[in-house]
Amino acid sequence: MEVSVEFHRLFNQIEAGLWFAIALALAIWLRMRRPWRWLLPLSFGVFGVSDLIEAETGAWWEPWWLFVMKAACVLVFLLAFLDRRRQEKKNKNG
Image 1 (cartoon, rainbow, N blue to C red):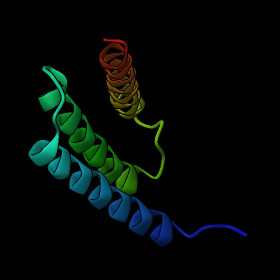
Image 2: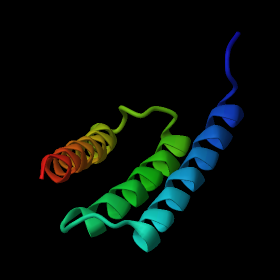
Image 3: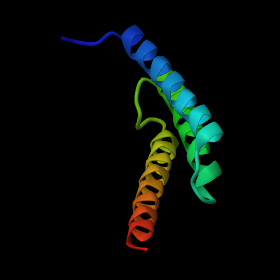
């Protein structure tokens, strides 16, 4: 079963809205140390923008810089997650 272009576009627009909502929630309530306090919400916002671009291009890998944008955001997500885990272990162990 093939997915229509309209469905793909709508799905990406809804997904972008989700990322923007997460960015806003993190900007308001995030209790992480710097630079994550501002970098993580910014990355979720940029990820939302990348989904709006993807909705128009139809692919997450074209143009090439869209893939780089998404990969950079995912890298920030991963590094923030690992930093948070390291801080929790540090706090737990004293």
